[in-house]
Amino acid sequence: MSKKKKKYYTVWKGHHTGVFESWNDCKAQIKDFQGAQYKSFSTFDAAKKALKGNYFDYIGKNKSFKSELTAEQLKQIGLPNYNSISVDAASSGNPGIMEYRGVETKSKKQLFIQGPFAQGTNNLGEFLALVHGLGFLKKHNSDCILYTDSRTAMSWVRKKTCNSKLERNTKNKPVYDLVDRAVQWLKDNEYKTTIVKWETKAWGEIPADFGRK
Image (cartoon, rainbow, N blue to C red; front, top):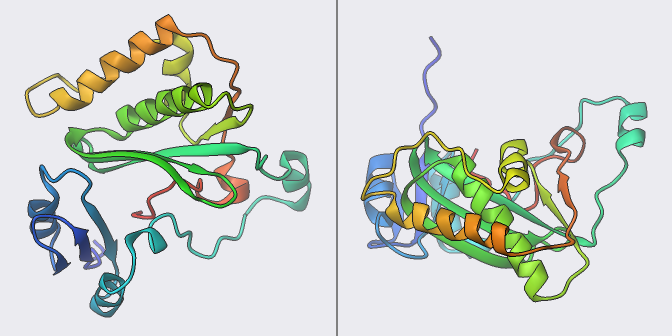
């Protein structure tokens, strides 16, 4: 069995800031801290260097990406539509600490962010991000399309429901409160926004990705 690679965790905003050498130590700093900012790195030096910089300069940064699709397949898919926003979620564990955000697809300028929440799943975060994006675009009367890399979230939005298997409890109540509001919003509102699946195999990670993989 291959040995799991060690990670180092930079916390820019939390109960304490700094570089931490275990996920448990990092989690203690971000738990119940609204707007916590953190990211993992493969070396201590990289984590220490990042601490001196800005959180937003590090999240969503793709590694060098080279598609494995053929030239013909890439031609058929084409390029992303940059008259769009992109949404994504990140969950450290399933369930685990979860957050989501939306960005301008081309510039990656952050438009909204929620979390981290003490307990959620990636699917719940993707669903909330998608509904938040729909509400954001409707509020701004925007004709942008909306990208997500989650077929599950697209299905839940289409059916105006949430089929998560995560049992409700006091720990995930804040997330489920948002889910209930999101489902009700879908039932009460009409929208013209086109939701499109982000083609990860052709374009790399979605621009709203938190870069924690």
